[in-house]
Each structure stands twice: as C-alpha cells, then as structure tokens.
Length: 264
Image 1 (cartoon, rainbow, N blue to C red):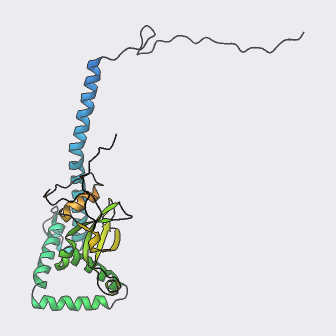
Image 2 (cartoon, helix red, strand yellow):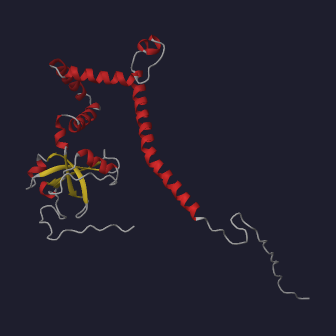
Image 3 (cartoon, rainbow, N blue to C red):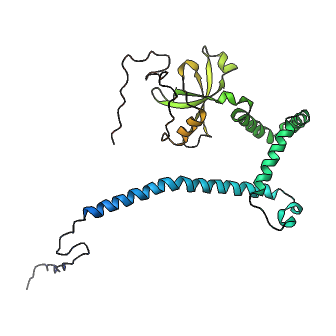
C-alpha cells in the first residue's frame, strides 16, 4: 500500500511567562526608573572623567619615581647602602641622590675647570665610532630643546601639508642654510612636523617662509593640541590679528567665512 511522505510532528511550544510579563504582554518601564537609571549613568561617567586622569597621573608618577629610584640606588656601592648603615631604605633616596648629583655636575661644569674637563670627555666620546653618532644626536636634541639654542624651537607655524588646503602645525627649528638655501631663490625655514599622539617622531620640511602662517600659541599649547589629537583647543591671545581663511601670500577673501557645525 503506497503511502505519501510523512509529515513531521509539530509540537506546540508552551506559553511561558517571563519575568517581564504577567499576562503575556511586556511590562512598560516606569518613567521614574528610566530617569533614575539615566542619572546614575551620568554620575558614573562624570566620576570616571574626574578620577580617571588623577589615578593615571598618580600611577605614572609613582612608576617613574620608583623606576628611577631603583636605577640610581643600585649605582651606590654596597657599603654605602642605607640598609647597611641605618638598617632600612628611605623611599625616594635614589631619586634625591640623582637630583643632587645633577645639581653638583651643573655647578662644576659652570666654571673653567669643569668646562675643560667636559671638552676632554666629549673629545673621548667623539673618537669612539659607535658612541659618536649617538652622543652627537642626543647633544643636538638637548641643546635645541632645553639648551642655549632652544629659542629656535619657540616658533609655532601653520603650513599646508601633506597637500594644499590641508593644514599642519609645525615648529620652526631654524633657517635653512648651505646648499639647500643656495639653490632656492626664497628664504627657506626648517620646520618640524610632529606626529599624533607621539610628538617625538615626525617629518622635517623645508618650506619657504612666505608659505607659512605664524601662530601666537606657545610651544606648550601646540604640543597639547597635537598630543590630544585636537581635543585641546588653546585660547586665542588676540582676535585683532586673526587672519581670515586663505593661503599664505594670497589676499584674504572679501567676505568672512561662515563656520558650519559638523552634523552629528
């Protein structure tokens, strides 16, 4: 006897009442509960915004102090360790000794005998093939940032980079000299363009001075702007000298530009 294909048995699902239902329909949340939940969420986020930077700052400072303290403390000979003399190790002793040593070295190198000894040490370092390029680079960086030549790094400018109508913040490190300046008809500046959020790396550009726009912000404010990725906005010192939008060397437009908000 031929039979057709069997139909699968259908099992009716039981009707279950979930915790959010009583009669089979979802319960509506109370407006008071929604308001309380929103208030708690806002307060929690505000607490994170306040305590987050403080906790991270304390952790970074603590790690730096302990790390430097251990390095400088281990440089002491074993007979001079505080554990051997007084029976315990005062916290931060290595850091204090390091600061005192740097201060004494600075006082010693300020006189004639210290200058002669410093030249002798540099002469020895420059004669070592592997050490010479590293020392020369580090000395040039420190002289530019915190040394006598740091004034060349105090100018903040705006340049069109990496293409026209795209602006980047740069630091003037000096005036281009030598062969590069001889082969250009205009006055050229050495401009360092740092990267975000690590400003220790970047690009060296040689830009004509007329193609740059001088900014009134300080170097510290420019670094904050770069590290924060644009979230920090320095205060404008003077509005009277503010230049309307336009390329360097070109007359400003006759009508002021209207700032438009970015749609969310």
